[in-house]
Amino acid sequence: MTPTLESLGIDKLSVADRIALAQAIWDSVAAETELPVLTDAQKHEIDRRLAAHTANPSAAVPWEQVEAAALARISR
Image (cartoon, rainbow, N blue to C red; front, side, top):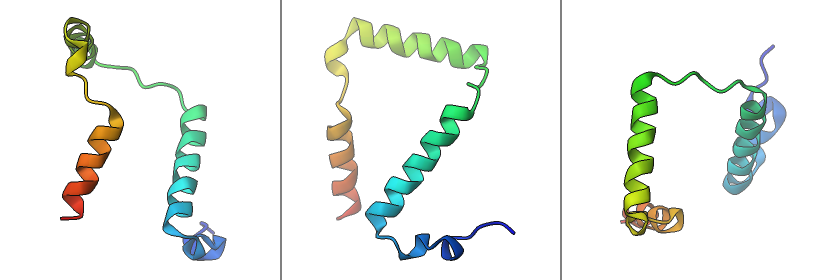
């Protein structure tokens, strides 16, 4: 039988605890998973973005700023 939110009691957790649990599960899966093989297009895109950042590092937006802006848009 496949475990469910209810059978594991996860549905009783707070939203914050469920998010933390989901992140912990994701991290455990990522730790056991081989990295995917990137296509040439993906490799070129990574190189392009890295070069753009190297050329103009001040254009980068910190995650906290991006997150705050996204949350502000959602709560409107």
